[in-house]
Amino acid sequence: MTQAWDAIAGEAVRRALACVDGPAYTVLPGGARLPQTSAPAVVGGMLERLEVEPGHRVLEIGTGSGFSAAVLSRLVGPGGHVTSVDIDARLTGRAARLLADDGCRNVRLVTGDGTRWAPESRYDRVIAWVTPVRVPDVWVRQAAPGAVIVTPVHLAPLARAMAVVRLRRGAGPDRLAADLLMPGGFAEARPEPHDQWPVPSYGVDALTRDAAGRMWWVAAEWLRAHEPAVGMRLLELMITDGRGGTGWLGAVDLHAYLMAARPEGLTTAALGDQGWGVGCSDPGGVALAGLSGDLFVAGASAAAERLDGWALEWRERGRPGMADLVPRLHRRGSGWDVRAAVP
Ligand SMILES: C[S@@+](CC[C@H](N)C(=O)[O-])C[C@H]1O[C@@H](n2cnc3c(N)ncnc32)[C@H](O)[C@@H]1O
Image 1: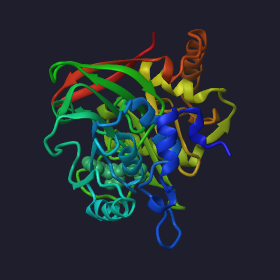
Image 2: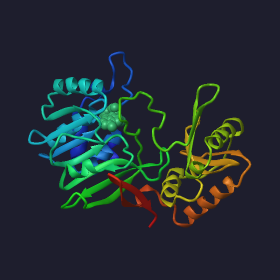
Image 3: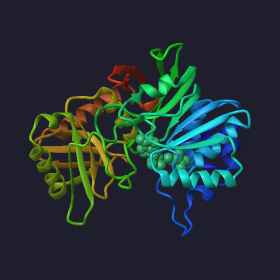
Image 4: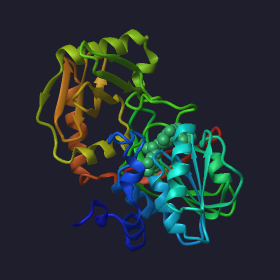
């Protein structure tokens, strides 16, 4: 049977993935799946971009089930080493036992905030499975010259406006270049263990639950100049007046384009049990495109017309998607913001 990762991973990553007994890491004794687990296809795609070679020293942030650490252990081989950090001691303890049973003697498990600290070493490769607010300096400082870093990032200061970026460190820690973006999103890195994964910890401007307990949130930079009540009113409108419509084929690419173009009014939002969307909002309403292209509109405002205009621009520019965008790095505080440009 063709595995999902065949399309995205090369020979070495495919072999390493095939060697690991995934369920041994990701399935709990009662049969449920450990929530902090990445899908093998996602692990394969990101590890392919990491360009791991035998003998490399790898820093992994977000051990989770230990599955990706087991794959990395095979990729670096007996001459290499993996340091895997997770904020949750229950997970590093569990992964340590599983990796030992699996014979992975080249993996060290560490409990802590991997966005702030990692055991000192000159890592050849750094991979994160959680999204930092910005790429932290500590990863770049602890990386060796020529090191590759693959991490999810926010392309805009809005919840879920995410992509995965590949970075290459030059001779000095201030010499960092970004050469690739791919679609992908992970939960945000947290300063302490957390079980509430569906609630974004970054970039949300108003959040509520409807009568059935379903979560709704909205994120838009214009909301930050207003009282919190404005965001709550918008959510109320979305819950009580939300209606669907036909949107656009290729909405994932439209999302990527909008995260790069960042037009005034750009909005991300979670829609109860209807997934989430990217689009436009103003105090009178919202218009959002869901992942499958469905349209979600609430209120009476110019938002739908403006979103139509943005989609037209996107089509006129050849429908660029994430892989067409050019990553740009901006030094900010103790790290680097990643933004995207439409070529
Ligand atoms: C998507 S899971 C990792 C999945 C893992 N790659 C696998 O194959 O199962 C993300 C993990 O990051 C951890 N995490 C969250 N914030 C963190 C932080 N600040 N430092 C280190 N780990 C963190 C979470 O506890 C969670 O286990």
